[in-house]
Amino acid sequence: MAARYLDEFEVGQVFETEPVTLSEEDIIGFAERYDPQMFHTDAEAAKDSFYGGLIASGHQTIGTAFAQFIRIGVFGENSLGGPAMDNVRWLAPVRPGDTLVTEAEVLDVRPSKSRPDRGVIRMAFRTSVDGAVVSSFDTTTFLRRAPSEDAA
Amino acid sequence: MTGWYIEDFTTGRRIETQPVTLDADEIKWFAKQYDPQHFHTDEETARDSVFGGLIGSGFQTVAIATGQFIRTGAVAGTGLGGPGLDNVRWVAPVRPCDTLSTTVEVSESRVSKSDPTRGVVILAFEVSNADGVVATFDATVFVKTRGDAAA
Image (cartoon, rainbow over all chains, first blue to last red; front, side, top):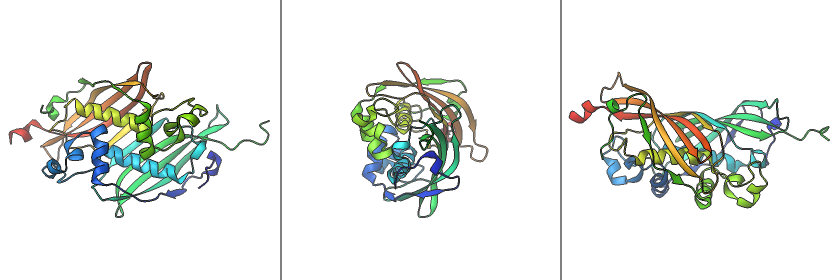
């Protein structure tokens, strides 16, 4: 999809991302660096844990969801980075072989008052496995606005 | 080392983590998989971006801070995972070769009413580089109670 300016997003629009499957190797590789708890790094030890087996770090789940959205291309070169993320919820474990499907819904679109070339978009992300939501979070991102015709 | 039980997480208690230095390769490795925006993945085009150069993904900053906290051993064998994060704020860019230091402070701690074997802790994370704070967030974590250990 082509990159869109802030003005081309509308509250309520939903973007579906490509599904992605996490392998045991992906889960362990991520967790050894960023979340080294045994139920994320050691399939054997995880069997005796509260979770009954290896589960993915929640940080990997949200990163995977965001990456799949970025890969759609609607933010593209118009993204100016993000200052915030809120309401991150990990509702159910993600296990090796699970296929994650993420949808991102536009919550709010607000042009900047002080910087006419940009604005703020808030998006609600929901990631599901087999139709059940496993995590959700809301992002805030700065996006370019369409160049104004009388700017010159 | 055995981690802390919920009773050890007293409000205001602070945990210092080991600093960690992030290089350009690790920034790009993470971003290619989890945040493939060009200012996180391509040094050349990042120069012409609003950031003037490569910066780390904010998701990576939060994950690094979490990893360094886990490595302190504070929840080793006592942590039961976490249900969420709140108020994640990325206040300044992280650049290649920045050394990140994370401080964690207990902001809330209570035993579960429905399950006396566990409690809930809210931890306030603050991540800084040499110039000051780059990110803050609050993590909620489930932790065993000491009563559970005695049982």
